[in-house]
Length: 422
Image (tube, rainbow, N blue to C red; front, side, top):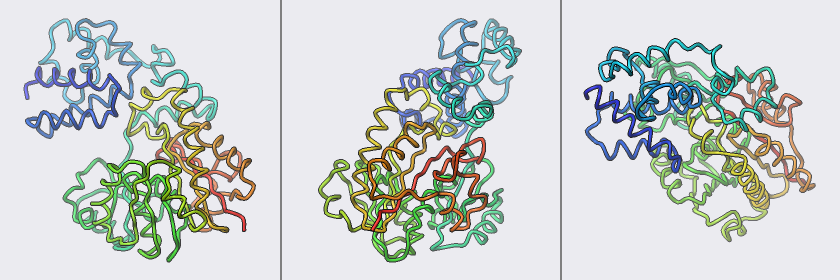
């Protein structure tokens, strides 16, 4: 595609994304479906430009003010990846001079919001938690996430799969915490990779893998993944159960559960039972009350621990949406707890960084439910031989799992664990 046409295409897509009425990945995917003539390079350029702007929005909008013409074109110029000469061939002389001037601006000339590129409410909340580590956290959130895989232990051992991937020319290494994780370098296409096609691996962040391990589901048990979504953790739990017992995958979205079906077919699991529910008080849940051994509540959340993958979330969430999510999370957790039999385990998890969705929800549940005993996450991780387990827990103790991108190279995750008293 001619440089001028590609720049125009970028500008148009940026304008659509910045309406923030749908997730960015959905907007980009729809644009590609509607423009099938775009080749792989054009698609990569469009996607990289959009995500670069979302990561550095405040800085780039500030720089764009000194330019002229369409705001979306100015943002596209500032974030355009790749060869400078290719881009310059699409610019006017005025635009070239303006762009050259922008490239001379150094970080020490920027105000704090233009360096951290977070809405102020979120920057304040994170700074209160991590203090002097704020800049390191911001830097990590501004980088693309690595590609992690989870080995399907029903079909393969990690060591054998590492050797197979390396033989195929992929650069990879074991994840430092999860015993079933592999971290790839770069973003190789997996669609035709034999190990992926055969269900030997699934894409799953290392932190997410640890949530399934915390549930510690056993052979022959009755288990519920209460907010299963597309089933990444469901598949990990089913494999841990060695394809025995009964594993219910609940979700209020039939569309998300439909996305589980091809993954389930690849996995070789036959103990998983997807169930679409209307809400957390659905009658199908009531019928299982007091019968379940283990329940995972990976609750709907702000997703602010996943900004490396979905930087649009920091612009789509706000204190009001977080407060509403916290109310929903509390209601879901209470409903899910009713499923457990005495001695059963309950795991509450989010991919948020905010205490309002994490510690506050967990603490309130503990206070209101004396028949549940909070379990120290550090000890649970030690018991399943997770390396450096204490480093994965809340800084004030080992009660909660707290994973941070800048400390653990994973998405941000939180988890609390309880056991129902006999």
